[in-house]
Structure formats: structure tokens, C-alpha cells
Length: 459
Image (tube, rainbow, N blue to C red; front, side, top):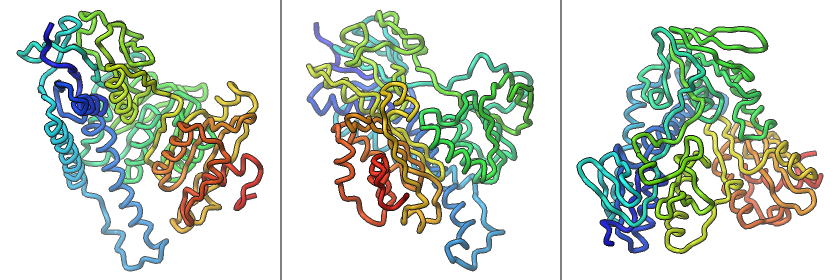
């Protein structure tokens, strides 16, 4: 049987467009179906726009603290952020990146269909008024914001998702953020830095639960020092009009807010996909896949948020490439224990692998090394010594189990650890790698030396 395409990708986010380009590079006839803008949530509503706004917040903060660096003559009373201009900059950055992705798809001769897609059988989808057949499908439809059913929404209230929060034309005087994960904490930092009062309500005992507790506590203390109120171990009951009602420390509380941001997580986006017509099975809300990213239907794969594995843009892109290679005889398996995460607050936070608690529960014999940014020369010159590098190592084999970092520019440093873990480097090999001075990255081998009790620049 002849098909219209060798591979058809459903969804043009970082998983979908990367998969489409890689398939085209392999000489395949490829179709990409996207109902909105290519680039998905990451480019249009997530990673890129939030970091654009956060950059402006950082510049604003630097100006306010310029006197600390010997800069005089700045009239701080006249310094302000123009939200309309900030939003225009956000749009300019997005448009440029989306245009770049469109250019890459065109250059690789990927056919792009702008429509919603739904399966009619295992080899056919309906996309607008078209019926498209394909030998293989890669589902990359991403995720949507989770609106939890256990939080009642009553009356007239200003409840925003992260999508609407990115479009704010003015900073709310008071914002309650429900959820202390990456999205919630980044918005907390942003709105607080730009002059708003922020209250974060998190159900778990710690913010940023993927980060080692000792490191995330540094981020929490810094946020609280800067004026953010954080309530952990708190359960939100309802939002009624402009009030958020929650249970905290055994008693009922309420907080009045001009805006409420719902940031409790995301759910796989399969609405309207009609995957069941192709016989695709689910794991709760996610499309179920095996270790090669195949669904139970041999010609259909699923990558990115929709498979519910790890909801990060770089995970989706990696899975997209892996899926294409596996379709044509490969056996690429994604190691989800070695995927880095980054939080773009100030100071930044990045992590990979296990926390100390997780490692002790699994391995028992572990070694921990820590190196504070207060002992790092580059951090001192930058005027910000909050933070540390914390490493968790298998006590018997010296295997790197996890690294958690808080400090300046640490989102740029975690890739070193990702490479080391994927190459199964030992801590001795990290220590033997010469790091340039002065850099924040010098703290990494120092932390590993500390796991031996032999850090040079900290006792």
C-alpha cells in the first residue's frame, strides 16, 4: 500500500518539529501537522517568553542595585519597567524564533499543514478538510495547563494560567500563585522583582521538589528575603472572588489577591486526537509508550509531554530524534535519570539525577560533597554569593548519582554534569578536569573533592 508520507508528525513543538527535521534529513517524505504556531508551548507560551521577561526583570534589578558596584548618578526614582515595551520585546523574540523554525522546516522540505489532526485509523488522520495517510506517525501534541478539580472556583475571580500571566500589561499589586514548582517559582521571582506582592502556596513540604531540599531551601530563603511569602504544606480549598482559601499549619487561612496564577502542573494534550480510533492505549492521561517510544500500535510513536515521561522541552527534542532513529531500526533508549532541569530565578538553580534523600534510599552508601558560592571568587565579584554546589556520589563505585546547584549562571553549568553522567565519568575524572579561573564552574570539582573531605578552598 502506498502512503502519502513516510512519517507524519502531529504537533510542531520542540518534540515534533525536531522529529520532522531529523526524518527529512534521513531522506524521508515528512508531513508536520500543527494547529497553531510551530514551536509549541516552549517557544510561544513557555520557555522562551518567560526567560525574555525574566531577563528584563534581571536588568531592572541590576539597575536598582548599581550603587553596590560603585555606579553613581543613576536616578532610581525614575527607573521603571514599561510593561507594553516589555511585552513587545517578548513578541519580537518569539516571532524571530518561530520564523527560524518555519525556515528550517521549509529548508528541509517538510510539508507543514496548519490544522488540527485526528486519527481515523492507524495509518490515517483527518487534518482540516484533508485526509492524510502515513506509514508512521509520531504524536507530539504536548500538554495543557492543569486546572485541578479539587480546587473550587467561585464567583468572579481573576484566575490566570501561565499563558495569560505572560501577557500581563501591568503588574498586579498582589498575586497568589498556587504551586511552587518551576513555573510558579519563576513567576514569583518575576512579579516580585517588578514590584508586586507575591504569595506562593505549595502543597508539598518544599518548593522545587525535583531539586535537593538543601539546595531548594537556599532559593526559598532568597525569595523570602526579597519579599515573597511562601507557604509550603498548604492545601488550597477554593478561590472565591478575589480570595484564596487554604489550609496551612492545621488552620484555615485566606489571602486576597488581584490575580491568581494556577501553576500546579500540566497534563498531556490528547483532546480531539481520537487516538482510540487507531487503537492507541493510554497510561492514565498520557499515551503509553515502551522504552523505544512506541505505542502499542507498531507504526505510532509518542514523544514529549504527551507521553507523560518528563515534561521538558529538551526531553521532547531528544525523544523526537530517538523516535525517528527507532522507526528505522535503531534501539535508542532515553535515560530519564540523566535529564537536567533549570530554574531561571536569581540566583539560578539547576539539577540532574537523584537528591541526597533519593540516593540514600536506593543505594544506602553514598557520599555527599558541598561547596558554597561564598567561597567562589567569581560569585564574589558578581556580588551574589548565595548558593552552593551539592554532589551525591555512590560511596562504593564513585558513580555520580546527582548534582544540584544554586548560583550565578548555573543553568549553563549543568551540561557538564549531564555529559559526565552519560559517559559514566567518575568523580576522579571530574576532579582531574581543569576548570578555568575565575569561573563559577570551579565550584564543581571543589564539591567533588569535598565528597572526599579534600576541598581546597573551603574547610
